[in-house]
Image (cartoon, rainbow, N blue to C red):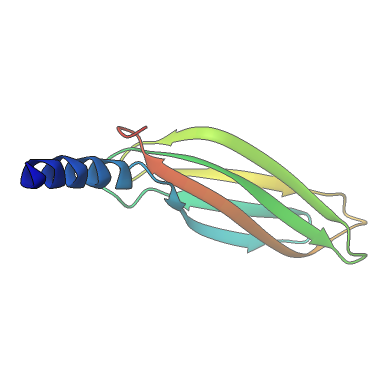
Length: 105
C-alpha cells in the first residue's frame, strides 16, 4: 500500500513540475530611441511567454511595456519594443520574460 501511494505521489509531483514557468531566452538591444527585446523558442515544442520590457532614460525615468500569453511555435521568435522621443534617449534596458510549455497548464 505504501508503495502504491509513493508511486502515485511521485507521478503527481513529476507531472506538475513541468507546468512551471521558466525564464525565456531573451536578447535585449539598447538603441537611443528604442529598446528591443527578442524572445526565442529553442525547444522542440511550442511555448507560451509573458513578460515586461523596460527602458531607462538619462534622467532616471523608466518606461515599460508588457505582453501576455504570446505563443511561440517551434523555432519562432517574438519582439517587444519600448520607444521614446529623440530628445530623451535610452541609456539602459532590460526584460523580464517567463515562458511555459504550451501543452502544460
